[in-house]
Length: 178
Image (cartoon, rainbow, N blue to C red; front, side):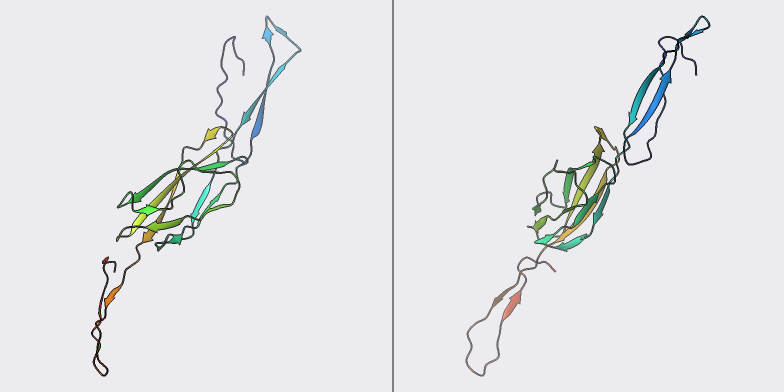
């Protein structure tokens, strides 16, 4: 291709591998029918779009259970970041969630949060991740959902009885979890 002075070479380069690739451009100057024998080479490093896999190995459990979220990436130099979490229906109903902006750069990595559901209803925690490498962030995020079920309570009242009497123990579930 012949370019005029001040032109811009605007190729769209796609790196389908998992590591940086170098594209070499060699330019020579031609003017008035003369070719300068000295060429210049410009190297463009094409960073791949970082990839990640987020696997939720424990999608539901009871309060005081542990997540088992596995993070992997085959991209050289990848960093996976937890960019957001959402808990529904009660935004403050679960504690023990990994802090937002926590990053991982060694794979595979596992998130083993000990989640406590302080409500009487099942809570769903969404973890949202993004991946970057070489200073570029992949715009595609990945989410996993963990359902944290509440623990039921039990209470009983047993009055004293005489020998050979029938017991009369009242049993109930004070927090109403069924």
